[in-house]
Structure formats: structure tokens, C-alpha cells
Length: 202
View 1 (cartoon, rainbow, N blue to C red):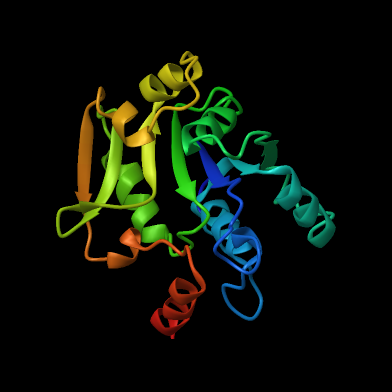
View 2 (cartoon, rainbow, N blue to C red; view 1 turned 135 degrees about the horizontal axis):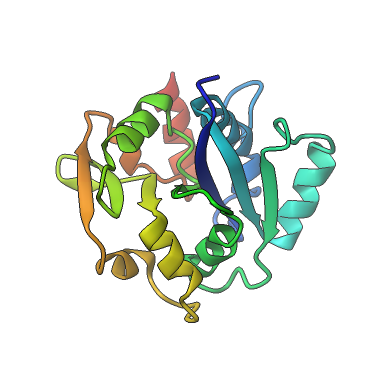
């Protein structure tokens, strides 16, 4: 584990996974880890001191059944999105409200479990005075996004729940972080995507 950092991550995992055969957070990443475990481990070993999981009620129940004593040194917080039919901005709002005094926060999708320490360090090391950082591959923006306190405070003060996050970020200063890691663009939305992902990993 790296030195602990006053950095949060909001893991967005409240979707209904209607195109998958099982909830995305509990899909197998490898023989030992699920998507949600792999993502948590990545941020934990990066040094995040506040790992916020946003679930719908069903996934929350399944998570507690599968991991009854899983808390990663008390760094985990679980938030329920009671309206998963809303845009993901609502889940982001629910999670951001739990950031506490941290001035930086990653926004991580559960369907992009490829996140790694190199990407996290690149974003963290380069945000500087910018409002947010985005990893890019061949001029395409990917995941995760790292936001600063200006964006965090603005989200906390926004009453609207149905905004599109990309459009919301348009009012802030962005820095692109170029990477050769094309997995920042991947999303696992269908069984076909999942099968491709397994091939990529191998």
C-alpha cells in the first residue's frame, strides 16, 4: 500500500445491470476477485483513505451477504441510491456528499474495472491547479475522472438530479492526461463485452 492520501473515490455501482446476467459489481474479474473487489483493492493500495460505494438496494444486500465483514481498515462507506433510474449524476451527488474534508475525489465506474495504479498516479500527480483531470487515449477521454474541491463543492450545492456529468463538468477547467493505456475507454455493459474483457486480460 502507498502512503495514505486524503483522497476519496466514488464508485458508481447503482445501475440495474439489465443487459448482464448478474449485477456488475459481483462479476468475476479473475479467479479470486469480483469487479468491486478489484476496484476497491486498486484504490486502497493507491492510498485513498475514503472509498465510497454507491449501490442500489438490491446490490447492497448482495454485497453484505457476500462480504459481511469487508471494510478495508474502515475506509469503506456504502451509500444507497434509492432512485437508480435517475442519471448517474444523482449517484455522484450521493457519493460526493460523503467526501468529508477531502479536496480530491476520483469518479470511478464499476463497469471499468481495468483501473490501475499507474493511471491513478498520473491523474493525482498532474491535477495541480486544474479543476479536474481526465485520462485520454488517442484524443478520447476515459475513466476515471479526478475532481478537485471546486467541483466537489459545486456538486454538493447543485439541487438538480438529472444532469449529465460530462455537461456539468463543461463549466470547469479540464486537464487531459495522455496515456497509452486504451483500457481507460472500456466499459463492460453486455455479456459480449465481458467475454472480450476476459480475452484482453489473458
